[in-house]
Image 1 (cartoon, helix red, strand yellow):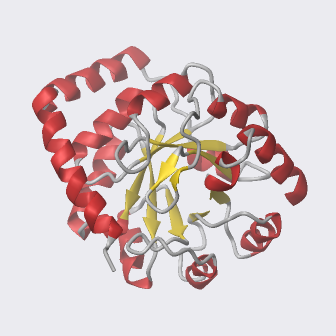
Image 2 (image 1 turned 135 degrees about the vertical axis):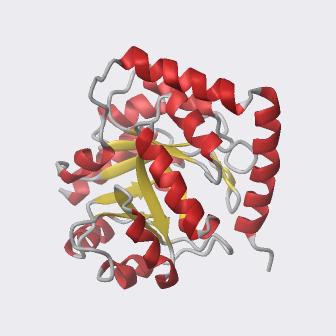
Length: 266
């Protein structure tokens, strides 16, 4: 069976080299430096704190497409759905910015940021510091790092750089062998219930790994969550966040689907 993650990462490397030719790293760094200066020390939004203080912990995802499902909502608009998610009780947003496989782009975050005030997660296959600066520049508050994409030293460096430029890190793991990555002090840890090699989903993966994560770590369960009862059980297992995308995006009105889901778990 073809390993989907390997294919995505290989394409991502080529994509990043092309972007670096169009906008050199030095220029991108200068843009972020100017942005940080303009912020003048203002407090950043914290996805971690938002989840700790949330009654629901729902991270609603804007995902128009996936490798396993194809188009989910090809006409989904970043100026409508993220706002609707916020209006209907989302604690934070996850916005896909990969174009080839997920139909996303950085401009989706720029568009959403004009109207939403809750934290936004930059969701992409981040394998290069260049992407962290892109995430910061487009208005994200946190970035996803996937352990399966990265060697340990790469992960450590990316976490350090993210923190230096004001981004929180959600580190995603799927296997027990990736637990050592937690030593690099991410702000949150996500357990992906989807195997990124095969895209097969199993929510039991969250239960298997929950007890092996540090008690104080903010834990997030990702993928395959469609039943409110699953959220209640995951809470009892110690999870504070629940990343849900397809379950909402396939509905006619994703925001209304989120509202109904929250009513069922409260």
